[in-house]
Length: 206
Image 1 (cartoon, helix red, strand yellow):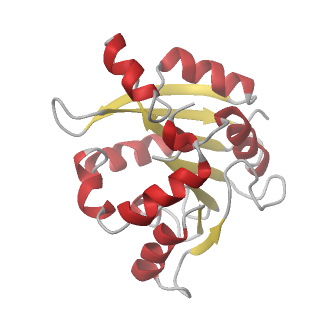
Image 2 (cartoon, rainbow, N blue to C red):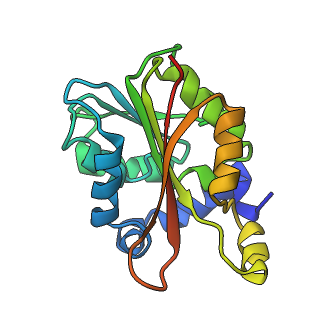
């Protein structure tokens, strides 16, 4: 388990990163990549969508271009404070502080679920993916964006010491263990040489 796959350490990390997150994030996960992932996600305007690990609301902003029924959840109070600053406490998005491994919602609450830049911090990603499946109605889409595994073993070992990095085979294993049907993997990259993201579209079985 990587250093930041510990919930307490991750909270401390984001206490400080939240101050500059929106300035740093575009170098790894930018608006063009988000738009491509949203096209793959393919939600309807009346879909109720949960953004797990919403952070300061970058993914949330994109989701609002497709549906007004967006809910955001994050474990970091500092990230949520930034999100409230963007959208307001009584704005279009209802935010919750919570844990991806114990989502505070009933079964089949949402039509679809989105999570970008969060899975790498989950201590038990399969448990969290099972929760994503549980709160999404049968047939609903679950889209998860995480860091693609480095191609060299030395860099890979260093990356794994920090947080979760994974490839398509590992994604297939995790999603299958969570009883989610993988539809497609897509590798995305902001610029040549920048970190790659692995975007996985899966579906809750009917």
